[in-house]
Length: 467
Ligand SMILES: [Ca+2]
Ligand SMILES: [Zn+2]
Image (tube, rainbow, N blue to C red; front, side):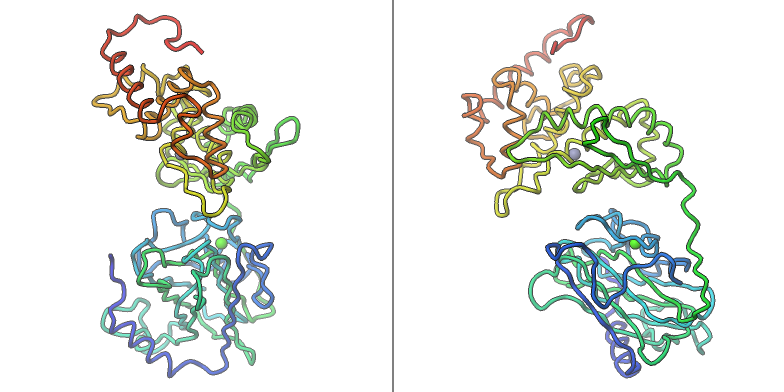
């Protein structure tokens, strides 16, 4: 665990702050739960703005370690709020297990402010906000931008403006939080700098670092000319629909313009053909497949991830895999959009991860692109020391699911998916579907596959596994 604030620093900052808070400053906070209707509709905190002073300010991280899944600092002043209750990339947040950090906002010159507002959204403990806010012109005597371990911010010329803590007395505080900091008798500042000393909302838990969605600072100057940052250089997001109008896909390549022609020429036809087909393969009682899917391709880490109906993919990885795995990886994510196992009844057991990923890889490697041999015997032969564990996940579990489907029940995936989505999956169902326990199936599959792998490689010819 990284320690960001020495007790002396934090303590001194709070103590000095308590004496110097201007009595006029008001802090208003509002909290909406995800069941309160449209998100971020606060009664006193104004809506987020992309035409405020902060939208063109420079944001800098002075201290703290962002989480691997966090969006960049720019999400804090793009005027956008997350569309999903849990959308890591649309928020900025510090790494799990760390204690927050310091974010500097620089307006370039001293600016009087009508108000400052902060917004956050998370389904659980990372929803509430807890921070100390400071302002400075930069001309204070002894002014220092960044604090050190021995001197409190107030000793470095920073003026404490507000203490914010929106953590409710009961419950984790999931939902949306909005905070308004204002001075009813006049402007705040003028300040050139704002400094957010951000704390975890609960040092006792690893997941206490708030998902911050937006920071607004609105000028008090009636002549302030909003000058929002130039639109991203890349193409504007575009939407395509299946011919029947039933499903739509919005592709955001604004940060990966080099992939636009691949997306339009290669990816889109696959989405339009395969999403409806996969939806038909994963039906359920009273189940409506999501009709609107958003795909964001931007430089990032890893491969791709799905949250609700939003897929995020790493542009750098896609670029390397244009001829390889790029399309298949997105088909795998489409399966996650259709699984919607989050909709199972509250209180039911979470679906085993090996099945979630095994089904996605089964549909990808055995249904969408069997000709690539990415999870079958051809692939297994190329692996060294592969462990034939049915619950290993991804391709190995996909291989197991394919084997059981062909051997015992062509409707296996359909049954499995429905049970997982409806929250009634249990191991005994395997006997019902196949006449064998899961353990028996796993043993049979392993010994048959081992035998096949030990046999001499068949001569190249027609598909090894006709389907
Ligand atoms: Ca934002
Ligand atoms: Zn997956």
